[in-house]
Amino acid sequence: MEGFKKFVYKVADYFGLVAGLFIVINMVLVVYSVVARIFFKAPIAGLTDLVGFASGISALFAFAYTQKENGFITVDLINEYAPVKFQMVLHILFSILEIGLFALVTYRFFVYGNSTLQNNNVTWVMYLPYYPVAFIGCLGMGMLTLVMVARSMERFQALKGGKTK
Image 1 (tube, rainbow, N blue to C red):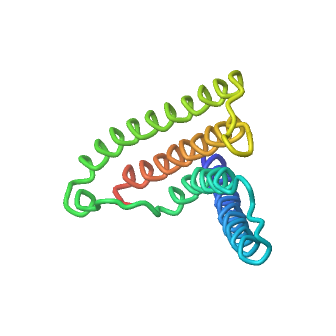
Image 2: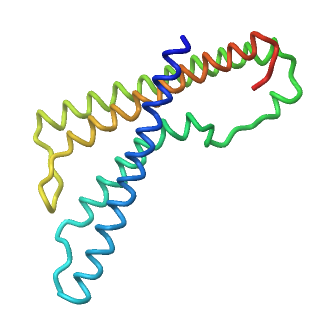
Image 3: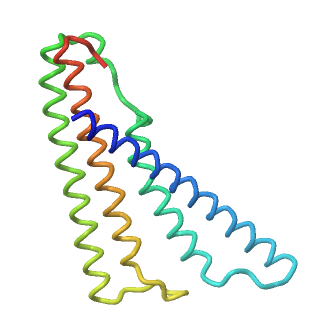
């Protein structure tokens, strides 16, 4: 179980690096297009397609890393005042709900990717196919789900030991 958590967290770190890389790519594309528009009257055609894809990929890959780092907003009122047994019950309930929800989102990204692949859906300007980004979304949401599983295992162990985390 400890090996699973280490592996998932390490992969989530790499996902965070990829997310950061796509943010940089996004910035370079926009700056280059602005400079090219001002000085050479030749902006990047289809910049919105590229920026949209880069933004989507950066967000999808950042979710797993943010979850690993506990970067999302939480309400700790229950952890501060509720008994440990009640916290365990809530944790189990919410873990099942969140893991189930994001497993469903992962599956729907996969279905959407297959649909866009079969239908040859492309962007309007550059005619880039949608399916690679949809499958990347599937990968990002799948990783988020695995991080949630690892985080739930970690938290349940802490609660089982009588500690709140």
